[in-house]
Length: 406
Image 1 (cartoon, rainbow, N blue to C red):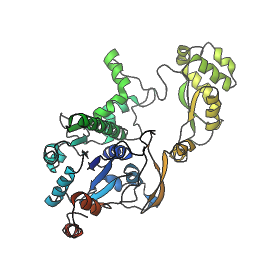
Image 2: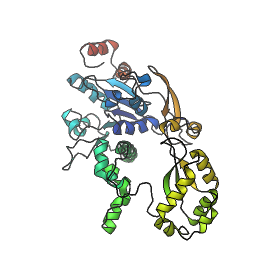
Image 3: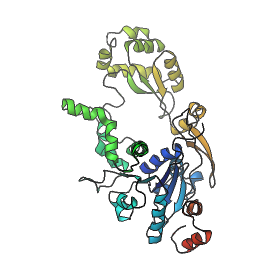
Image 4: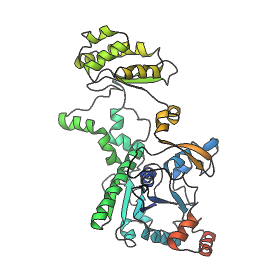
């Protein structure tokens, strides 16, 4: 069977930046037809204008960020300040199952694209609004980028080293996290519609979607009335559990995690220090945790002069969980990701063939695949208006001259 799970589902996508496009990327991977609504009046998707750019040459079709998260989609350009363009959007809604947007709370209504308005054109419409803090509540007007959401979620508070200050997590993790939650909510709504015939409105808060990531911290306070302690890469119970310096430059490290006394003895033997397995300082998990500082020094003395891959392979053969800390270059050339088909090579009409991160799942009954690279801006305007709305080439040319489409 070659039909993908969402074959026949059409999505009208008003999203921008990361969270929204990451959501609709999952739908495209699952087989939905995703039509991006873009505009030339302002950079609707800022990711078309931020680096890295292919060959270090800037351009709206050359941004790696945009091209990664908009694979398999189509692009049309509407000047949404014009009533004629809004009318086109309304007519497209009639042809779509799902509408997605991640503007600030209330913006879609101001644009004339709120759920109440759009359901006048399709009664069983599914719509998701992916704002930073939801459509109601005292924070609804706050700016909703992933960085502030990560801070508000408690992630920064729990990130850092013992005795140090809270630390940033390095990426805007709430964005892709919200994208996954949003895609899942849309799938649930599609199933609900199959059973009931009813559409629904999904009010998603990026902040709230991030809170489950820090469930342990929330529970620590809710159950015990205390804040979790920042402790770097250490685990509350397992020891050793850390990222250890390996031979080479400052980016070469190897992660090691020991979950049982047997694994600890296997690690000690792999280090050619079998006597450590019965050392009273390290005999049990509690002993090792109590003497974690000394334990980390002993392991670092072993890993520091060794190649990170050699260390990982040695420990894996011994039954100890270990793996190098990978750089972006490591990931882009990883043989495992290549063999599984996660890394895909796509031929883009402007920048040529490039490697992309693809689909992180395989399904035997409904195989998914990346159908196409990200679209050039406005590449599908004519075809979409012709095929879905029945517009003639002459009418489209007229709308283009009037600045309604491009």
